[in-house]
Length: 485
Image (cartoon, rainbow, N blue to C red):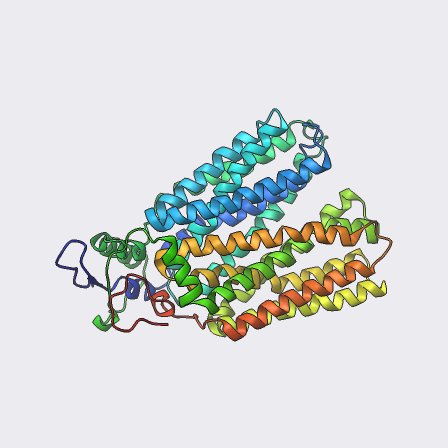
């Protein structure tokens, strides 16, 4: 099944690796990838929710401002981790990085649970954020390069949506761990920081059995390793009952090994070669991040200030919100492969914005209560969650393999920076709950932002469904007279 390797070391090689990977049937091997690599988002959701409940505040004598700063430090760590480890992932390979970044998260999160003081907690929350940020860049790249093109959209979207499963798990854990009937005030929150590392140890074991991306090997002068890796994967698929169709030789591509990609080349790809795709990636990441942070970080304030819920009961309203966010990607992801990326992005972004706008009208009119407000959030974010997950899929698909992890990290960082404005802005709009008009305007702004994101992507986006990554975007290393768009 192997294509002919190059005759000279470092010379061009003709490879069937991408075509062989894309024609694989779904087997247990792919479930290993889903579980082993996809668990990162569960850990991130778990981390955010554990920290959001601030069980450590009294133990460490932290002010409200310090609690908020701790969240900012974690997000800053994510941004720096994504940028730094994203570049290393493109240079050193996916597997080395998705092992390293998970290890950094496990160690830092566990040590944070032992914090004797605020400064100690902040330092290790920063490093835990770096680990998770690096995961976003390395994992999305590995998943898209290992999953067959027929399933790539639904798998990537579903995996990104599992963040909310982790958030729900963290919230449920907090109800138990932060209850002083079960644990002392200074003990429960510390145990919470160990949940992720314990689960992560299992994932580390699984990841040891996930191979390096054959596509990455192919473009980095390691064609024979790429061929051997695909041989092993195919043998495993056959053992697991899969049927392999022959791959015609005309599916082969010729590549020339590439080394380190300089920033000047990356800038040229983003702003000269693919400016419309850069617009799409930036728009999708910024709009979804803005809306999510606006609602997620202020929903408790809205329920308490406008609907009079108690801080303890507010926790229970989070569960249906999280479940709606989890179900959206799981149930709608299939249609991104069947109906197409652009149509589904327009639908999910557009419907989420429209539902939020309707809820804004009803909110201003005073016809909602805490339960019905939560229902509107659930419906809106059922669609928004699938759309937000597709943003990570999109920026992974529409740029060349050699800078895929870096592209993800750049747009992730851009989205995080833009989204960091939203909690402060919407917190200010909420005020003391005496005037609904400012927040109503804020909801209309959030709705408009999402709708614009969907429209921009529909106009300028790429139809990547069921297509090989190399068909969607030619590798920089491709040797041909006419590269694909």
